[in-house]
Image (cartoon, rainbow, N blue to C red):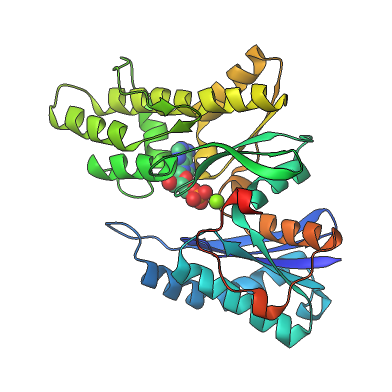
Length: 321
Ligand code: AMP
Ligand code: MG
């Protein structure tokens, strides 16, 4: 069975094609800005502009024809309303035109399930750290649950906001990753873990103040920021693993591309006799292969959806599933 999946929760529009358990294509194009952040209306326009070409590219890459597609899936939420609407609309058009079933899936759960498909992880705790989202997710007691999450901004938005403040441009995560390697002195920063949740707002303000004071080098700030923020994420991930009695950690989301986060996660897992699973970057960032895969999985598990039930769910929570 072949599923075509559509991703459009935020700045990335993607088309993925999965046949049974094989990813045949995973193509995408992201909306970027020269300065400033993302304007939802413009991101949606971007998605409209690129969708035709991406569908063609994905079919070509997968070496299948549109008529060969058996199922259409799309990110139904959570995400930005403007951009989600484009993916949902494309999915409905394809489903009606091809007379094939349609399934809307939860984007956060797709990050967990693609990890299980592409690694040896059987039942991991997912540390999902992306631009807008930061959640510790696991399947436990018969449903997907959130064991910890950010109380304010996502880790990626936090990194991008500080990077933009110090003039590194967008997206800043990869730039801070590189800059942090030149850091030598650890600067004490607010470490904000509240129960099982984290918060980045105060840390961001503190970093901006330290930057403005001109007493610290950019590299030392980048280095200390990463050590602090990632230790916060891994502290709650580790506790979630103990709580669920799970011995596997999976990293997901764009921030999972960070080399220092990967290194720290591996150290934590080694110290706990657990396994750490890290995906290729193309499956860490927002991608449509994971949407196609989750659509296929849910279809095979018996899920069916009417076209009138495909309205977008911008605030869909992982644990509402
Ligand atoms: P996503 O929303 O999952 O597509 O991820 C996008 C986020 O990942 C942006 O905030 C990026 O700054 C961040 N990101 C990408 N690569 C890295 C990296 N190497 N280190 C830290 N953050 C990264
Ligand atoms: Mg994501």
